[in-house]
Length: 109
Image 1 (cartoon, one colour):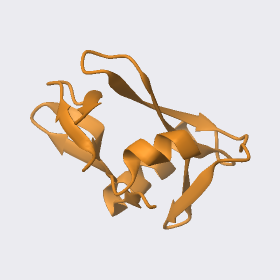
Image 2 (cartoon, helix red, strand yellow; image 1 turned 45 degrees about the horizontal axis):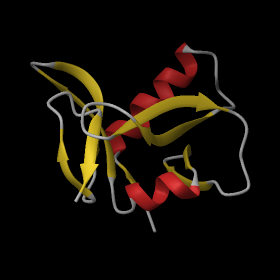
Image 3 (cartoon, one colour; image 1 turned 90 degrees about the horizontal axis):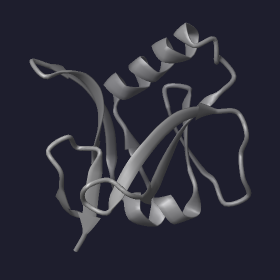
């Protein structure tokens, strides 16, 4: 089971950690019920690890996912994209059967 963190995402996470004065924190990615498609992503800085957490690193940046969320995110790529629509983190999840237009909510087939 794995999650891929792109170089762009790692750079943006590092910049946000400095901006938020959260140098010792890691980025937690969670999946919870909700959103227009059934599941939604949540991203936040955290400094507490739980027993079922799995840590992924890229360029010294830690990304943590709990075991239940990892089941839904296995093989996903976390990226940071800047385009005409703005700048945002994007999760390219191969397990998502469909997602809503905002990209924050998805369903499993």
